[in-house]
Length: 154
Image (tube, rainbow, N blue to C red; front, side, top):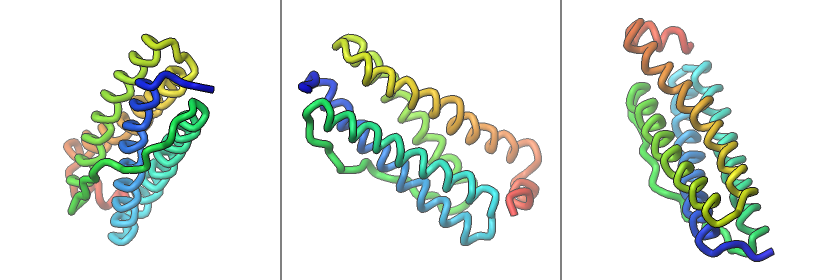
């Protein structure tokens, strides 16, 4: 099937963001594991796998539409401590959310409702799962303090 070239290009751009998110979550999860923070390690490792599945879905859609997936990932922002890792991941999710919203709009305009629905599902994951959880962690740090938060993650 031949897809709309603008949609294919946009999906290719989204692949780069999903691959960057996967890699950023990968390094942060391994850092948490190295620091002995097993609870946050497990959650961020889970997020890494979800980002990989998002990238996989977009790659498969690009192939279905007759395009060639662009596997160049965006830059990653590696934190140096718990707070900077969480902030970097939250900033990434805000960025992904913005790009998904634009992609949904483009797919709607071009009549590609299957791609639109796929991106809507990814937006739901981004807003209701990833972003919400990261925002909650930042609120917990403010509420109970960093040391108590870190202790709760052991």
